[in-house]
Image 1 (cartoon, rainbow, N blue to C red):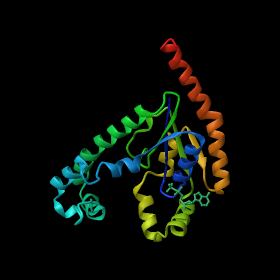
Image 2: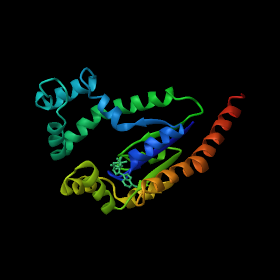
Image 3: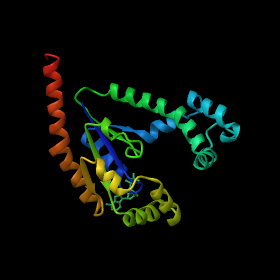
Amino acid sequence: MLFVGLTGGIGSGKSTVSSRLTELGAVVIDADRLAREVVEPGAPGLAQIAKRFGDEVLQADGTLDRPALGAIVFADPEARRDLERITHPRIAELTAQARAAAPREAIVVHDMPLLVETGLAANYDLVLIVDASEQVRLDRLVRDRGMAVEDARARIAAQATDEQRRAVADVVLDNNGTREQLLAQVDAVWRERLAPYNAELVAKAGEASGS
Ligand code: ADP
């Protein structure tokens, strides 16, 4: 099993790459999805959040009021750490479960927006970064997602810089061009880097187990 970390700044094209990798046969673990799962109604994470932050972070139907919680932790680093102490271990557990459930010979891709910010790069066999200039990302977020320019700018500013991401990258996918150019790069990386690397690891694991 090859364990690949995939990240990129907001609007870089990370989701586009992730979908392509799924088409190529990767088992993709979506960090955002798992982060939502641990705060779903009925999940112990949500109960703990309500205990720490009060019922004002819950909506009338019992689901998490994300903007309300976001406003609290944005303004208070201590509150943010408390929230992370509740959610991170549970997300890590679900990630480990998803990894353990994947076939031995799978290429497993962890689609992780905050890979660089959380200092996780060393956990992967290989780190893939999707790179696009800030201006290109701003244009796409405003055009395709209807985000206000200032909102898009603030979100970009809250993330790691392009330099910080490139510093931990094994492979950088350049998404300043067309979608087709991006997909061609993904296909080439799959063929030339990920598949051979994985074949090597699978062969080694086979030797080690004597099969
Ligand atoms: P991320 O997951 O990194 O936020 P997405 O893959 O959702 O980024 O891409 C952001 C937006 O830009 C999407 O609407 C996507 O369709 C569009 N997009 C991605 N790559 C390109 C490209 N090369 N040319 C034009 N639009 C693109």
